[in-house]
Length: 291
Image (cartoon, rainbow, N blue to C red; front, side, top):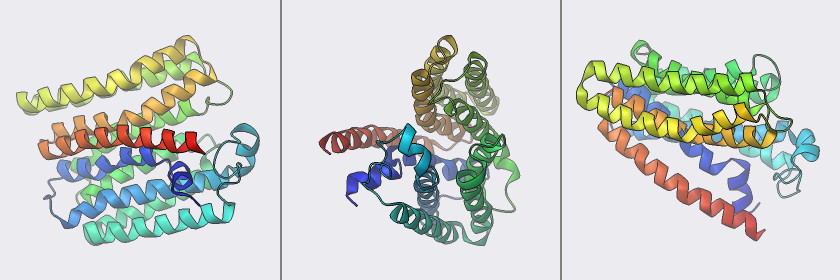
């Protein structure tokens, strides 16, 4: 398996969108920023990447007809290898959670990993699918807080989970098209989410409010136009673009919640993640075009 195939299997650029979850949870719950806790974003990345590999393993028969260019149906990655990658990354994610946050983080990581596997193998095409996926992202934020300190991180977890649910529902139209109601609902979630986090930050201080407003504006600018385009023309193409941008907009959304919690360091880190993501997306495109 070549590096480019592995990066495509685990959706490498999208993996960056989970790095801020535990930072937000930790900042909201008052956890100190220590070297040890740097393992928590890596835990999130492993669990997310493992879920992406498991997704392609579970969807290999459907992808053979709907997305034949993906790594498994194209023959570049075997189903057995994809399942091994998924299992290995899940195990690594759990281990890193224990290293970074001890038993309290591990206590949240276990149900998080379970939700990832339930979504990919059982719930994806079920009506409960968006709720399960939202639970995955909400739990990822709460992993940063750890068992016993969950309450302060619940607003951020809820905001990020709501965005995830909206994007997941919209993603169900990537092949056959979505509907104006679904796309408009996603746009409403985006607008409401930005307003809530900005208002909450302004109640704390003008500085936090300004920083959160800037991040929330970037979040809205990235996702809202594509959701509105899908509402006007609910085609599969518009649904795919809106879904992709909705995933990428998770980073500025995390930055807005980090600003609300007063963590300028997390905001700066997420700005770096944005830059790395842009470079990685160019790398993946170049690698795929050369195959």
